[in-house]
Image (cartoon, rainbow, N blue to C red):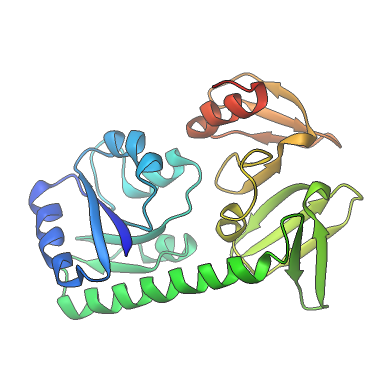
Length: 241
């Protein structure tokens, strides 16, 4: 059963979508409905949904700003909006679908089918990527690299590709998203510090204070930390409970 969250500043719109999603109660369960994006920010990590049905036009914080504020996320996104002018931005974020209100039931059926397929593929990829608890199998155009996790310094997103930077200065580019690796790497050592980067905390040299702050990595790279990830980073770096 997939877990879903609805975020729409209009109660009428979120309740209507919730009623339409009841048609899929054998596939999907709506865990929470939010009409305030800031309240959703404080709860979404705890709920850990499979999918977020996200309105675009909201006062104070629109849908894209919400995702940027969140910094990193492992759930899928289906945009629901009265406007059809944001499709390119939705594509850039690899959204499952972009539904224009009033939402057509046939289009909603298609979106749920795409969602199920996307989640199934992600779970399959996680299994394939994990030959044992110490190594990752990274499939490239050249072949498959078997990489010791301790050798990974950072992983950077590049559209639907991920670039692995290793401690021997080697770079490996794979055609899988950062999200897929975030789900299989040990959170005690690896953390997604913003939308585009996962770091191995064992290679952190220095933390510089700020809104989210920055990390200096071994080798001199300086990486920004999303404000939404700062608390988790502090807990991991300083063993705070």
